[in-house]
Structures are given as C-alpha cells and as structure tokens.
Image (cartoon, rainbow, N blue to C red; front, side, top):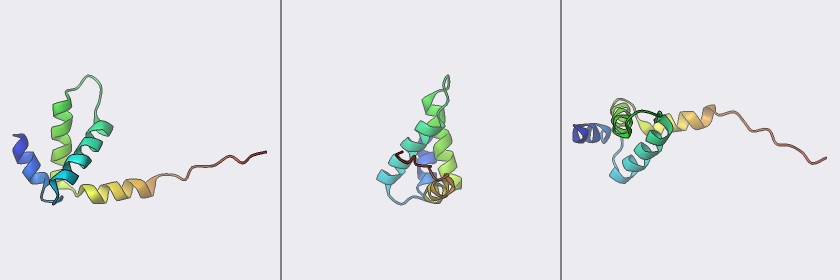
Length: 73
C-alpha cells in the first residue's frame, strides 16, 4: 500500500511537505513513457525508504559538469 511506502520514506525525511516536493521532482525525472505514473511514484517512495533523498540530491549537483560559457568576439 502507498501509505506504507510514505511512512517508510518518512524515516529519512522528517517533513511531509519536503517529502512531497522531493517525490514529485523525482517522479518527473524518473517517469518513462507508456508506464503508469502511480507505478513510478511507488518506485520513488520505495527508493526513499532505502536511501536518504537529501544526500542523493547533493551528490547529483556535485557530479554535474561545469558549463562552458561563450565569450563575445
């Protein structure tokens, strides 16, 4: 049941509002066409139960490559 997934995810995120925001962002990024949105949401909440979503988000931002900027001629 989804309530079990939500309570499991709350073990790493103490604020329900923050959990909702993180889950919606992750669902948008992980969703694949031709699959149910509910299944993607359940997968995200399952991942949040096993790992801390705050630390995963910090790692993603550190791994990104610096953007090269063009200089005016």
